[in-house]
Length: 414
Image (cartoon, rainbow, N blue to C red; front, side):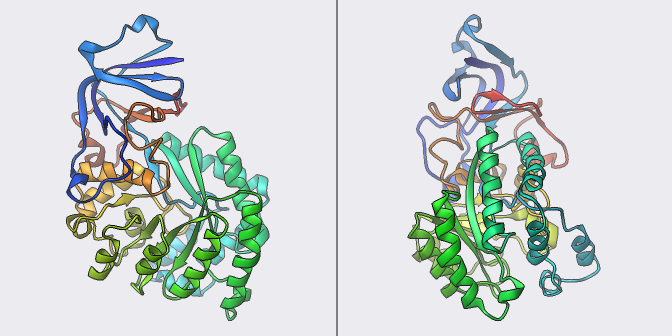
């Protein structure tokens, strides 16, 4: 099947050759093509160019007139917790009334609250709840998404989460990567026996997950009061023995040497980074590890924002992700993520879009197929409503400016 988009006002992220990631000043460059066409064959980007070189429309199965509209790659959201049960709206009210994240957790809220709900939820019900969230982020322009476990905290419940993620992967056209996050928190029964829970993760959970081929990545909440550098390193190495690559929560509240631990062990990404030291920046330079900022988490729970300007100006790459989860970011809207990065982190629109497309794709290992408008890549694109320019995407932060979403060559019903 051939699909032709014509009269496109501007195509963003047009790259003749595929790249892995952008860093430093290169993040400020967003190549685009004006008054253009885009040709899709089946699920692949076949060609693009200016309108005076446009192919004959008579030979097409579908022609989409994009007059006045912007086309760009779908968002690549490399950090989410989309699979969970229920919500935690009462904790939202607790925070308004002055309780901190840590105080809520110590009262049995937070991750432990979600774990209790998930353990009591059937796999079928969990799948149905997760379908709704996945369909919502697709309608908001996300075309590749990483989804973590971590609200199970038992072998059976973690497997249940990962099986749901696999079902989503099998039944939806969006690209999905699965991450095992058994090291999200210590269950109450292991509160005073951290070693016992880590033994369970390493000796039982990871082998069982690998046996069913349920995850590509392994994660841990490396943070004061959660998992230490030494504990996280053991989990990373156990995952690596089964082919799982590390993507790690780190530096959300404190800097305790976690970034060094992750870079030393070849982590694909380090995520959160609300607290970043000069030493952390030096450690990240030249590494394969992608820093990932989660600005709408900072927005929702009123913690510092990742120091994007300092990091980019130091020559680092940066990706943006939603952190969609029931407690600290109950939204997977990547349009708002991009807008928040511009408004609160002082990223330029060019930097933010690069961070949410090609760098986001790198942070979940799909940059060869997604993240840019490049011949041979998957035809997963956003078609906006008519815009004055693409700057309107972050500027009009409360407006839905998405008209159509195409995933792997197929127009989605949004």
